[in-house]
Length: 341
Ligand code: GLY
Image (spheres, rainbow, N blue to C red):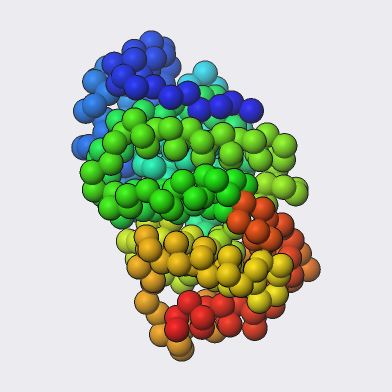
């Protein structure tokens, strides 16, 4: 499995990219304005730029990328360079994995979410019929380059979004790391890049350690879905909102921590402590009691389900988790009612 390479100097990254003979860059219109200028790229490199946002992770945008690749005469020797957040690395990875039966691609994440999660591990995808990441492949990028300097281009809400995945890594695999994260100054408006880089490295290592043992998510990799069964249902329900992914994961982690206690093994005191820590960072997502049933039923479409039974990751303790726990719609409704209370 290819591991992310951390690059502190943007000139170094520009040098790597400018050395390629046959590349095409994919980014979104925000990245084009705020991140590309930091890279000083050779202006003759073809650029595909799509509108930003989760609702552009669609068959429409995928079609557009394939068409632009065709127009640019991309062939099997072309490498697609995905420069952006999770939307770009997910859809760019899928475009590359399918164009000409597969061309190489490189991920350069520009968001914290991308750095700690989306760009690593080889999941590609788009949303389909209102369902998150429903169409996609497991395809490894040729390389992942992380330039922490891009963090300074992000809003507080985007930093919080990536931070949700970092908390998840601690919760499922490393109690100390979770404690370290939750004892930080959590304003996110004036953080030290050097300090944050060490945390990103830790998260990437925790994720790589899991993915390297189960690339296709047959078993252990399912742990990385903690907070995502209910988080994705909420995100699908609010698919047209501009709230970044990690905020839904934070909500999903609260609901799934609740269930880890009510039907799993997690201690009450530990569950309360975890929920308190998450609430300390994220505002709860508002929805009405009338919406709960519809949100809960979206979990029936979760990709980890088997025979129409919803399977969920539970925390057994802080830093230890188990997967394939059966939950019912009633359980999901109870957890969402708890979240909403
Ligand atoms: N984002 C979860 C995974 O890559 O498996």
